[in-house]
Length: 372
Ligand SMILES: Cc1ncc(COP(=O)(O)O)c(C=O)c1O
Image 1 (tube, rainbow, N blue to C red):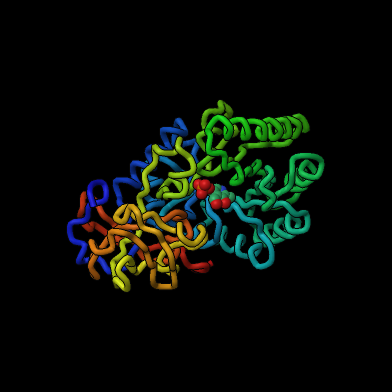
Image 2: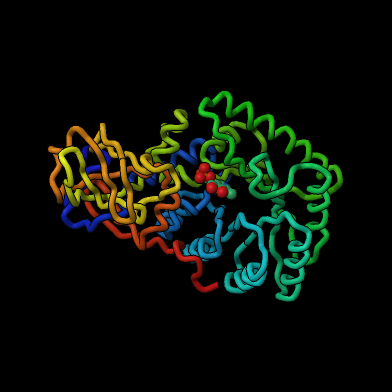
């Protein structure tokens, strides 16, 4: 393949394999900072890469706030020196004790978590008091996605008050993840986000009038963070994740995100030519995320008219009028439609820079449990 995806020694790569193009990752990160205006406004989500090497790159670029979804991700971030980590997940069951253990293991770390339930807020406070620790709690607001959180209003206010008044807890503001804002047209997305933001901002003002501390509102994913970035509000922190690696799905659905380039691809080989018009690749459902619909889990620039007709665990069958151009053993790159769940399928990524294999990056936080 041509730049930026050329590889000098493909014979040295086993397949299927996650390959990361290092200069593209760096460029995507720099673009994120540029959109944010300054590194301090960003709190990137590490769930896309789950790799210490990328977390280190983020820190080295002056971005010192981080977002995570699991304790393994928190631990991975802490191990590279991150000291301000937001675990955007509600603590229930044994997670409450895990949070206390985490603070014990990394005493200099500022950890905060989300909450939206009075019983677990109380239990989290009790666990912190028992551990002699303090944890930040960010109230999870439901901006219409209906996945987690509470809508702005009376009960949200009561929950924030409970957080502020519970020993062991430190109120750290609001979390607003709006992954349902999928308007292709940027103007429509801006209008929808701004409408939601007005409600949140009024809610914040009300809490502030009552004397509550609201240090931040952590907003958005890749499609909406450029919208929040334009707003001149010091409360806003931006939390995109996917654009660090970017993928074909966001590329196709959001034309304004063409400033990002897919940087993590699947290196795959032709393993069979079972019929005249079929090419079979070793890019099955265990090689790439299968949450996009069948037929569209990867983009194959090497087979422009390819129709993905069958995908099993270790096989992807593609129909094409050009099948006779391919031989078993030929390699190509597949661009994942949804990159995030795919990285977790690999123990490590092969790292390419200027065509050369320069490193291997372990995907440390693919595991659910490290030590905490
Ligand atoms: C809570 C939360 N924040 C941020 C993100 C990042 O969004 P994106 O993948 O669009 O960058 C996600 C994505 O799933 C998320 O769940």
